[in-house]
View 1 (cartoon, one colour):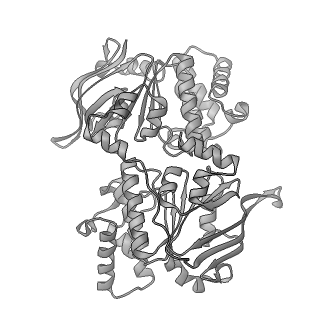
View 2: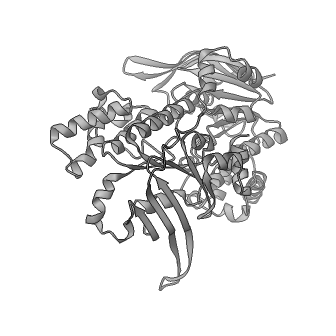
View 3: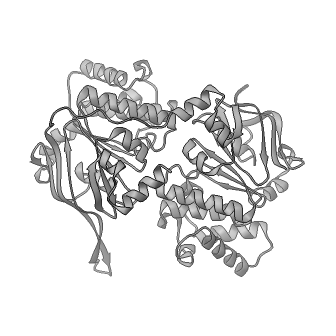
Length: 528
């Protein structure tokens, strides 16, 4: 039986007298009790469609230019505010992509959950509190009584996502809309969240609309899949049918975009470029009026590693394992102990002036390409900034270097006077790579550079990094929780947990014969 039906739905954004249509004549049925996955790349219209189901986007600028959205026998586009409020949260729950921006940072978890209950149900304060506690237990949150009193920033990414799920389900809705609920999470946490959604769906007899760009997740959780491209619905069918015999070229492109292959083998016996010996980053725990140190958080605890010229070292592990802290320590952005030898020179003993030449040789590309690029600077200014600071070449030579760097990352240099907001996520990441590449580094830290990107764009960026490494002999320290990407790019792998290395070896050995139970768990989850 159809729970929700979209009939010839078209959605656009008004700007002056013009309407830019982003969803075109979409017809789709969400059947009661199923998990339907809506997939497509960024810009395909899937999130706009999902948010429109509850009219969560402001009108104007959003306009429904044609069609209808039917909840059972009622057209949602005709509902007044009172009926919409009854539908939102009571009949339909939503899990948003980024829980930190969706949860109120000023209110405790308890207050936010209780508010959801009392908004839609005739419950006393005590009944609402008990309902909130029961829901946190149901979503598998450890120490739920303690977590009720916590603020969102005091929770981990996985815990915040579980709170979001609890808020969406606390009133036992008939339909759950999950909009990219696992994008920023580690593979093990991803698996837990997927398992949780599937279990709750069965327990509560609920319908789920699961929106994602990751077809691996679709294969694990969904009954049917609907594929969108540039606002058009191009294919709908059961997961098995679509995965085994895809009909549309775009679907075949998505399925073929999984990271694959292996890095190019190293030639001969390249010299060691970077060596870490007993690297430690300990943060003091202080208590009392006098701020006495009573212990330490051992974010990185006695790590040894080597990176050869032209080699890629993959650093993997869950959030909180110390991966990014190690990267900051290598760049001397975080105080650390132990030896960090670059070309045999210990960076720990260098002052700012002596460290300056090494800053040019060591560059970093961050996870979020939008957050790491200044919105006030043009692309040309962003890429050129390092050249200006280090006074590399004449002004005309710097202009030429910017153009060459953009060509290296396959961006049109004619676009260099535009600003970051005018580019897609994949293009912004290419700009971030060009900013590092223009300094002619020998070593680059890549901190989760593909985790926020669509699979097809991930594939393009990984192929780009491989080509740049081959052309310029770059060494990479590649930090990621996506083991498929690591397998495609890295020669050696270091597995971290709680600040320590649990396993370190050639990539082939790690992926084919893992020795640590923790590594085996990561691999089983990633390649399930």
